[in-house]
Length: 354
Image (cartoon, rainbow, N blue to C red; front, side, top):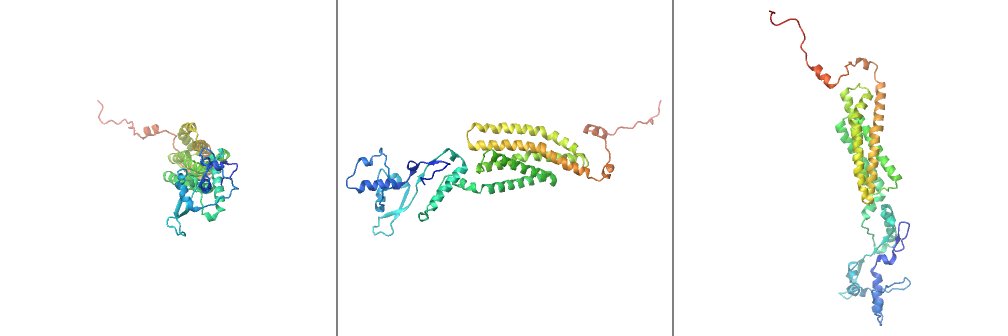
């Protein structure tokens, strides 16, 4: 384990390892000889155990080693049990133990590099199946997710997208508009993942969480544009020209969407004052989400809607326009005035003239 070195970091060797067997070897050497050297047990003097020295492991002295004042802290690392094949009822044998090894490196701040190191530890442990050893890491649960991260990400994105599409269908009640808005959200998600990869952001649990959060933002503007475009077709009638619907839609959505985008970017960028990887990933994801959301909602989506509606308008029956009753282009105030019944002028009076 101490010899694991690589581009992701360098092992600290004996200085970074807490392993009881080294102190136990010193304990046996110091108390096993007839002349005990007092300086040998000096804590200020570093003790080095060479790999060429052959150690004789005597299990009967292990319990005394753990009770010795200089080494009693090892009781938290070593667990003993009653010896099964011994005639001495007080005899104990080694049941299990653990040791810690520290690693250092600037690249270890990257989740994928830490995952590679965890796999290297497990490969070493797998070479000694007789010990029944296992590797523990405080972030092991998250590092194990890295291998399944692509599958988990697309499943989460797809599930969230389906839920958003159902919500849009409840309010829009138009399959064509919902399909266009859902495809826009899917395109935004693909663009975010692609640009983040080009931006040297790895796919890790933090990126996946930020990605799922961004879906809620990415559905906002496309849903508003689709809704207002759909409402314009209802208010102006099914035979209204696409250009009129688009003008009505953008006049209601465009400026508020730009204001929301600017305010969101300014609020999110405040996280950059904290030097955290999580904050950096979240800011990059949200900025990309807002920019792509506005591009899709105000440029691509209206272009697709008016293009498809123009094709449908051109393919309509020729007699449809003639059958449509022509109505004067009046506003709401003029309609209200026209609705009032004006008394007709007549020369007939209700009483005789004097």
